[in-house]
Amino acid sequence: MSTPKATATAAAMLVASIALSGCVVTPVGPRLYVGATVAVAPPPLRTEIIGVAPGRGYIWTGGYWGWAGGRYQWVGGRWVHERRGYRWARSHWVRGPGGWHRTEGRWERR
Image (cartoon, rainbow, N blue to C red; front, top):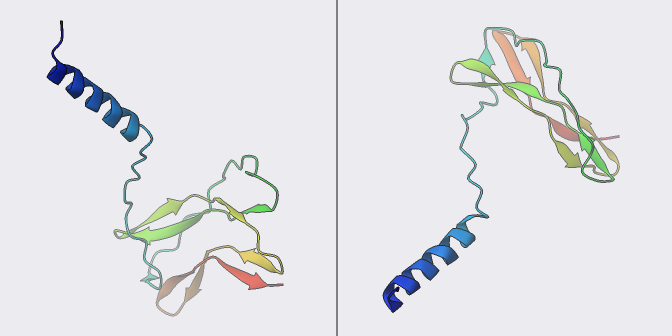
């Protein structure tokens, strides 16, 4: 037979576990540098498996190579809601004086 204190403790633990079961913890990834000049050319783009859009009016942004921790790291593409009158310009690397420079993905007027 359980005591009222044990029953209350068990009930509190049950409520806490139900409340925490919906929590999602997203690890903080490495900081990707924008504006850094990199001496080494980026690797070829990866082939991504693009699933079905989450709804009407979404576009795929496409992944890119970011620079963090002294090396290239792949950042996967994602679905974003389109902006009427704009097109998505994918992030890309451009060779310039002193090395490679990444241009961030952005919305451009059509």
